Length: 342
Ligand code: PHE
Image (cartoon, rainbow, N blue to C red; front, side):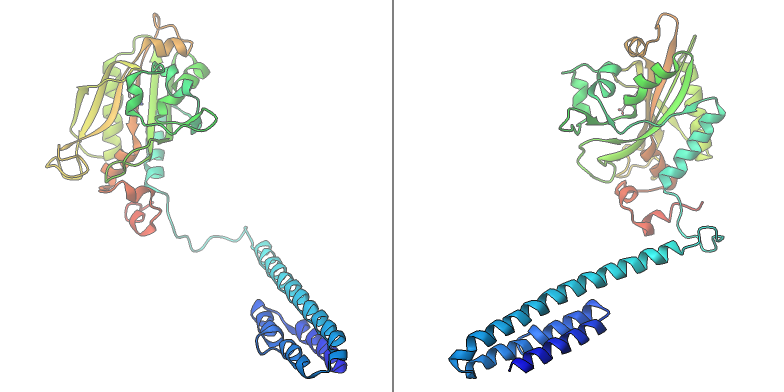
């Protein structure tokens, strides 16, 4: 029996060296250690051996079993490593200088519209600023005239982080930093992703995009604000869009407005996107509150300015006729590619 054990050890080693995939290793494991495997059979065969030899042979077989188990595990790992090396090797051979012949995919509709807006505003002398998504309570609220315990905080159900910071609920969270950065006069837009703990439906998401804009100078008035809004909308929609201005309350503007556009999904008839009103709130705006200018280091006696917070996600829905806001964050290429052609 001893010879048999030794022969098996040899045979196993030879067969192991021939394996090149984890499937083959698994087959070998079954052949040796499975219910009917040869090592298992050997152990069963001990029954017939006399008691004296049993102990010694048993030890030998168990040793072999352990060896087989260890070597199988090593081989699986070696094959995994080799496979990884092969893949890395293949990636390294990828020639990035080759001309691209087959391009599929496109920009996300939000990116397309964001870039279009950036171009429009850049042509009107606005700087484009990028800003963080994680901000402080001061930036998001206090610097824009929303002190602690102000009821306006209720309108923006906020995701607070354990460190006391928060996910910005509106792009206005960047106003303070940008006012400080440029001082007056200043014209800037700052697009960004915003987060609110909303109940999700066809027109509400917990993650959405806004594009904020501010313009500060001497003698800025509401007519400047209306002019820029109208120019922007006619460029984006490439057609006549009905707008209406209603009074709206935001602690960081005085006076404040809601700029609504005629719902382009239903043409004003009423649908789920416009909550059957025929109008869609698109761009809250107003004249920057003196407290916000002061917090930004700007003298409100000398300078005035306007601010707007364009709902970029809404605008995209209107422009492309996207009925359900959830399609935009879905990553569903079938849905998204319908809206993009650039
Ligand atoms: N930050 C406001 C909101 O998200 C929108 C806004 C921006 C209103 C700028 C007025 C001026 O609700």
